[in-house]
Length: 175
Image 1 (cartoon, helix red, strand yellow):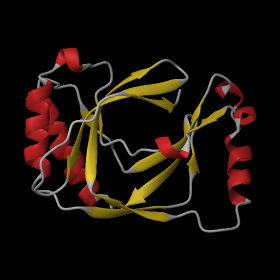
Image 2 (tube, rainbow, N blue to C red; image 1 turned 135 degrees about the horizontal axis):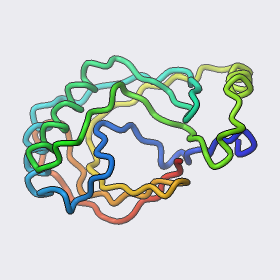
Image 3 (cartoon, helix red, strand yellow; image 1 turned 180 degrees about the vertical axis):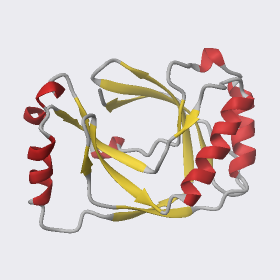
């Protein structure tokens, strides 16, 4: 897909972003307060399912949008409030549930959405799938123009369970 100006996201690194805190790091926040607030908020959230449908193409990514949005928005709002309580007032919830399957790369000026939409239309099988959301990963991420790298701060389950910490860098393709 590189000839299209897109950088594919490896399957094992697909994710659905709930909250964006662009330009902020753990140095800007009380991470313990965020984790405690998020764990408390998520303990009252029940696991839910999101169905992701056929991909769509924009100038910056190929993504698959999900539905229903209501449980996603409740979760994103709870996490946005938790990050604000930890001092990250510039964090914002994602506008809708989606998973990016490819991001525009260095050759993005040659990106032809029509060509990509044509290729997607040639896939002669269902491209939708349902995901059960049972936990949230809180991460700190960095962006170098080609990829995202993140450090997982915690895995927080939905419903009444204790959070578990898991750290270490994870690399994610992006722009």
